[in-house]
Image (cartoon, rainbow, N blue to C red; front, side, top):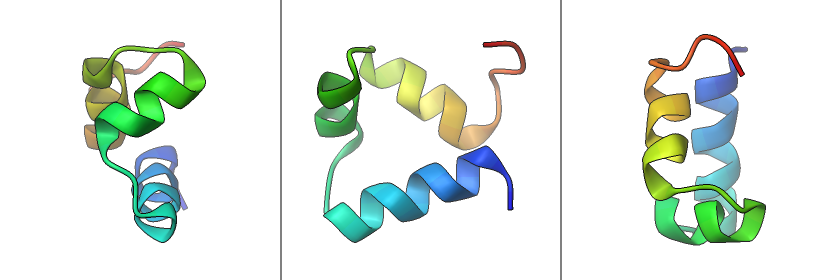
Length: 43
């Protein structure tokens, strides 16, 4: 399973919005969105 799928599933299980997960891990909401849609290749 790829990262974007795992991230969305993790967030869904916790009932979190992208904004909430971003704040929890210390990144912008846009970063979570990019990771979930696969537009970030290099970390």
